[in-house]
Length: 148
Image (cartoon, rainbow, N blue to C red; front, side, top):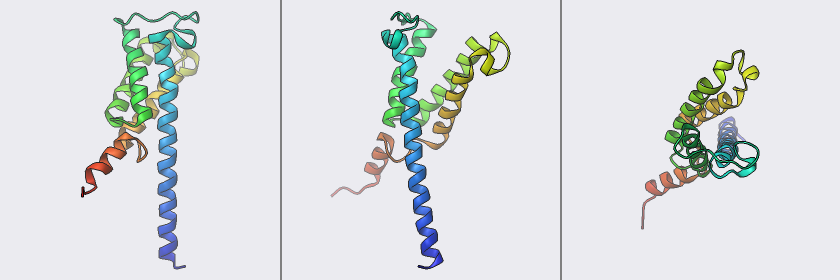
């Protein structure tokens, strides 16, 4: 096996690993994020108060629930991943400054590490897309494949 063939094999393996881990990150982050939304919108998983209460739909908390539920679903499906991820990253930065930052200290002290972590993950997805496994990738392949 020549070095060029070995390099091509390594490049292909690296690309496959990158695609797989990007897909796992996208789906995992979307599913975790959706949990926050279904708490707010539907009172599931304990709701917003631990007793199954929901957020008012016409409030910032309700709007956040819509973004988290349906934005998280779009991320899981890999549908319009880049713009949705950008929107969700901005939402998380806004949430951090509106809710956590005013409580002082470092993010681990004011409870803001989770929204900041989600903001970082969604920023990565906004910059890199959702990968080849998802509806965005499927639609792109469908557009470029010649029809018979």
